[in-house]
Image 1 (cartoon, one colour):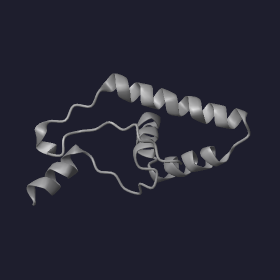
Image 2: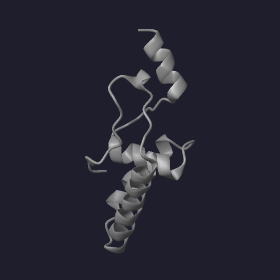
Image 3: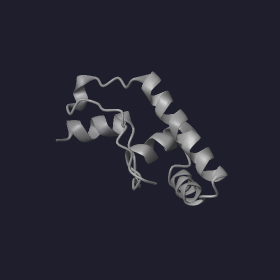
Length: 92
């Protein structure tokens, strides 16, 4: 998937209590789904192949979360939840 510069930005300091903009996240997901549908209608299956690869990597995550991961970091192979990040930060 191509790199998208539309990301949900949080403060550099994870302890600052980042609260993502839910409405913006929904718009990003809707946009990604619309692009995928348009690509499929145009016969471009590369996007679908990339999307299915991401679904395979993150099969325990929701459709919305997989799309957000793919948009923010298409080459992602691992993600961590809030508690894992907190444990990593407290260990520093």
